[in-house]
Amino acid sequence: MLMIRAIIRPEKVGVVLSELCDAGFPAVTKVDVMGRGKQRGVKVGEVFYDEIPKEMLMIVVKDEDKDDVIKIIMKNAKTGTNGAFGDGKIFVSPVEEAYTISSGENGL
Image (tube, rainbow, N blue to C red; front, side, top):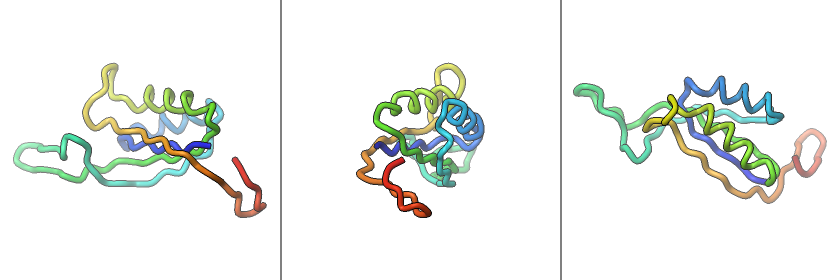
């Protein structure tokens, strides 16, 4: 199992979640986050914003589903055809175990 964490623009969340669900990946945790990437924030006129609002989507998938989920997120979270600074980042890490609290079941 793998945990995919995608930090994306808030305005892209709806379409990303919809496309993930349509592709058979309905189980997602969404968290409001603040941060900045390599660009170190954004300057608009004389105002500098060093913490920018984003959304983090966390999805646990089978190893073989990783590429499909990443493609869906990348396609739908990108701004325009070429993308732009601030579109986000995707992190993938292993998940050793997962349990369903209500049933005690192990696995997805």
